[in-house]
Length: 259
Length: 257
Image 1 (tube, rainbow over the protein chains, first blue to last red):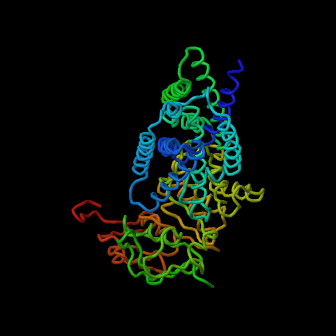
Image 2: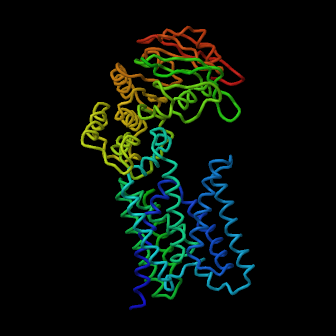
Image 3: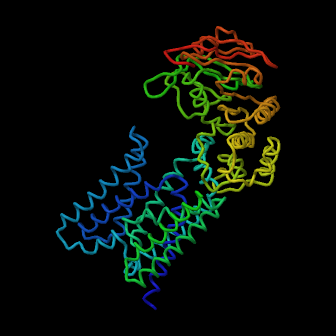
């Protein structure tokens, strides 16, 4: 039973990050950006692997740098945002793979980055996730009215003199941190679903930003528990089970809401 | 008394394409100006200059005696509903209260007086009973009225409205222009529309935008040749209740307009 304590804590902390950051990503149309960051973050993992440094701080710095690069490119390049995200997505991933190739070390541990490793999550990652949750909850709750107004009508927000750009950069930074820290739980390949599904359902079901944040967090926790139970019962990959539970619920409720 | 806004030799546009060329225009404070012209003539460019969203390529734009950006706290803006994302967890009340954005410090809550003012304007526009409806549950016209209320809670000195009755039925159109007439007794309104009929019976003066120029007329009596120049096509006078000009049936650049 004690074996389950760390995964349960991890699911609880990951649910908060997923629920809050995911709701913000969905409302601000940043889901594909989240997916792009998750894959680009592999560049940071590969770089840490090559240098023999602790992966978490290197990946955090690398992913934040990628996020700022996307902001800069979107402001200075005529390219469409989704094209830029696609390029950065693949480029970060390729950089990570090249770093791993160059290191010529055994890369078995990197599977946990790709597919998640809930049972072997390092304690310092849990502490970092706890700190991120506190910051996310504080910012999202305190600025929920502004964040909603920005999402509904960004142009109006800008003409009121509200610091839209600063908020957008802050939002992207928090999303980057959430992506890096959630990678350990569900893996970068499946992360975008864990980030977007609870938020998408909560946005559909609620009529206030505050309530959407709590509902998304609750849903992420339930999906996490369901995934853990399934993986425990049938000896399956936890990350995949979490996403299977979330994705099935999303599709079922999408079909029902269309009836 | 400063002008509502003043353009001095303004050229503006997007990338290297100038939509407005060497425009000089001054609008005195008070009353409602209707800005008409065909699609792509530069009506929205004028609004974007006044809002400080774009800078002139040449010349200067002065709004309420200062730069467009510094004037923002005193501006009210009603965009077209098409620009909004409605599938979000927010109600009509949230939308109207977002009018205080930039006036209340980030993270702040509207005061009792401010929420009462929001309720007052929703009431005046006949949408107070829809306050708790989700944005996705509102019709285009109801949403449009919500945007007008959002602009009015800011108690703006200059109100800028982009096609404010595009999705509205006759009742909502009457509500918007009736209220505009009232609030613009001591402030200035600028209404952009391509519908000459709507504007000519609801505004105090008209400016025609077209062919890179803006021609200001002190009243709604716009000479037909000015309209024809702006639209680049024939214009007829129609009277049913109130006389107004409409574009005549014609073929222009190979297409029917």
